[in-house]
Image (cartoon, rainbow, N blue to C red; front, side):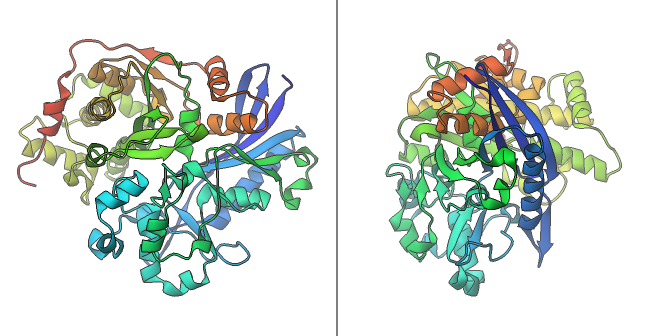
Amino acid sequence: MNTTYYIACDLGAEAGRVMLGTLAKGHLTLTEIHRFDNKTLLAHGRLYWDLASLEKEIFVGIEKVAQLNLPISGLSADSCGVDYVLLDDDDRPLQSPACGRNGVVPEETSRLLKKLSLSAIYAETGIPLLPIHTLFRLEAEQQSDPALFRRAHRFLPIADYLNTRFSGVVACEESLASTTQLYNPQTHAWSPQLVAALDLPASVLPRLVPSGTAYGPVIDELRKYPALLNTRVVATCSHDTAAAIAAVPARTEQPWAFLHSHTRSQLGIELSQPIMSCQAREDDFTNEVGLGGSIRFLKDGAGLGLVDECRRAWETAGQSWSHAELLRFAAQSGPAPAHVNLEHPLLHEPGDLPTKIARYCRETAQSIPIKPGETIRVVLESLALQHAETLRRIKAVTGHDVEVLHVVGRGADNDLLNQLIADAAGIPVIAGPVDAAPIGNILIQALALWQLKSPDHLRSIVSSSFPTRIFKPSSGFEQNIGDRFHSLEPAGV
């Protein structure tokens, strides 16, 4: 195998990175070339992506790679889901895209829900109700700014827009399309029923392409660099979670689940077909598309953003600790004095999170955490319980056993959390790699450009290139978590 080089533009909720991937003799090396903040703009009380700044930073990063004078084979972007860009007739942005962090669209204002029931929407998309999804955001934007929509020629999710900027090819890759709640995972097409209910012109929807589609050469603006003369743009898995799960170093003979552990958590299993049953809908399971048309049957939930929220609250109060220090405090504090249901509405009300956790514990007649280490321990043990409960529900809904859990993303470096998950779920946890999204992005490029043979070959490259750590379950932690988890309901709320 010849040495080949790839660029991954990995755009997260708070930061972006331009990464160089070097694939040689069955081994991948990942190098961060350029990192930048994903700063939002505040206008009229709403947050917007600073798209112009992001594009500038990404092209700065690509230029830095080009200056290394390595022959770059592929280029691709991945991003979080939900957010999108509205384009004019020349496929230029009409305005800065609204940010999903603005909050949810109130159900009572949705005309769509007067036309279609929640069960009908789930039966069509396999996606539970979450009003921050593209479906409801498009509807809200139609109502609030109809003039803008009359000018809109097309919409594109963020990563697909960036791949269009790199190549001039306008398309939407299926893994990102499947997060919009406008896509049917059974037909692998836009849902005519939902498009009609939304009163969207069919022309606004971009054509769909499978994960790992090679578009063609980069635009002339990039071809001025000799290193990019033969570079092809690839729509890998444009959704960062899908790219990360493609890079899970799993063995196919062992039933496994994945946890993409980051600001939020996505925990689930890979399936060949979606499960869109009433039970799956009632348990809020999502069917999203992954590499090779696979289905990521998963549940989205709270994640390590809770630790970040606690840290920010203490910093505002004049007490500043690093993330590593807080995790050390939590390890030293011993077992948590209480557990909380992290999805309970009380914890999502205005106010700082440590105070809300203390209130929750008081109203459930549990011991109240006092020290920062105790509060973080409550968060981490509660996350472990939540993940164990999700695994239990996966087996109940799908009938699939899970023998090992692979943790990728930021949480793969959190040894305490991974041990707690192993203890709560009673199965081994394999942690790593941390940079799963750009790794998946790069190796899917290699697969699309015929440098790798199959998704299994891709995963074998990950296994041989990046270390993992195994956490085996130990006794003494809460094992019968189902009743315990659901009993934590504050009486006063």
